[in-house]
Length: 160
Image 1: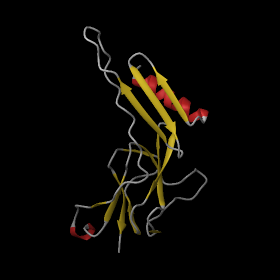
Image 2: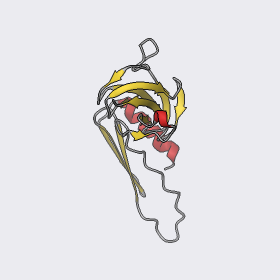
Image 3: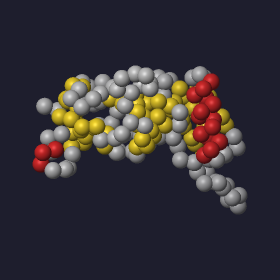
Image 4: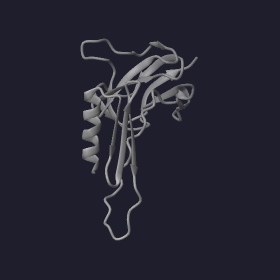
């Protein structure tokens, strides 16, 4: 089973609304659980048998954390007091929940722990990113509807 087949299976399970799907084949065991709205995928592959060519192991789909722990900015002295909210996953960054809705946060918005600051779409799943800190949004570092990488800075927050 290759990565494309696994991705298609995850998409199918997400669309079907099933809470758990288990698939066992000769050399691969896959369990996909969709509990709190976020899919969880476990892939277990048996040890290769001697003399039989083995396909490369598929990388398991990473668990998607609800939010990323803030990290201090190592920039100039003016920005040393700010905290960076970083992307916990790779995907497409959206500042609002839908095209006809307002942005989650703007520069100057006061946020609290647990407030949704953006949405990142990965494999057709929209993951709400929540703040783990309280403070005021000082700067939005990413444009709306653009791709983001893991650990990429998204926002500067003044915790004071």
